[in-house]
Image (cartoon, rainbow, N blue to C red; front, top):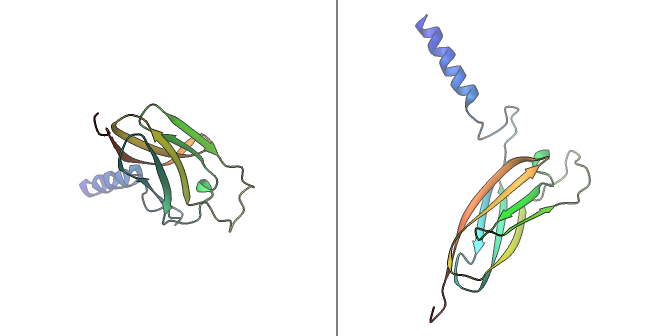
Length: 136
């Protein structure tokens, strides 16, 4: 009986754990990477941030997502694609970019979230450091 309860416990843990490599149907979800350029600069500065889906399969969920940017300074921006309906074989956009101007020195946590039909698909965060100029 102890072996049976151990197997049940193991099965419950496996079912409760989120799938990182796929969705149970053999489909691999892409990973979201986030890069900022420059990552460190003197103010004022305009920073380009690129979010990229890496690896994984072409999944309808990731086709034409809404993109939300949180800039870490109280600023936010969002965009939604105007895409035709998904059909098998269509390519999903893997790179999304936006720029933001920082006027004050500080360390800013930049976050991007991909959403589809109101639910979060993936999110990533990076840090941008803005230093004061000479004499500040």
